[in-house]
Image (cartoon, rainbow, N blue to C red):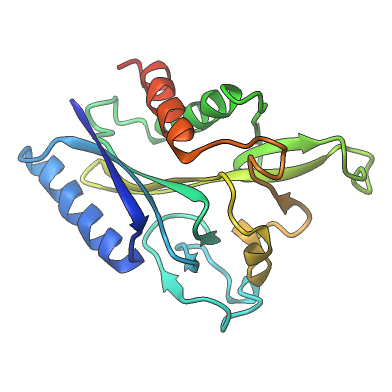
Length: 216
């Protein structure tokens, strides 16, 4: 069984990392159940293992944390649902690529419950939405904004870190970084797309979509 944990308020980033690592170790040892942890952080930037210092354009704006997850710079803050995923990838077939695809499908299915079509783009990590209301790109393609970020780490085939979905964060806070190293596209949120969604509704959608995406 996967334990679902929801923490109200704002959770300190370092405390969250320590808790995740301890839980992942317990899962690997067989003493703890797998877990999905839903929370919010105070405004901060995190640097993944591939982060480039040039992409931190305003280093004094918010605290910056080096993170052990994959990926580059990302923002966390109020109004963004962070979903930390501590699951046994070994028990699910030792297939990291398939696991990431399941995470992507989970986000896309969750967004679909609110009438938002998410997309995966080759070479661009995360989940994207098309913006026909914005000017097209220089190549004539539809503009696209990022609505969800994905960055995980595995230890002994147990995942930790995970996903963030923009519900209603202050989108100007993303301007202190080049999110995930991608400068030619923007960021958006459910509220920015015109959806007045409550956090509890998003959490309920995440739970129902999890069962479909992971088959459990």
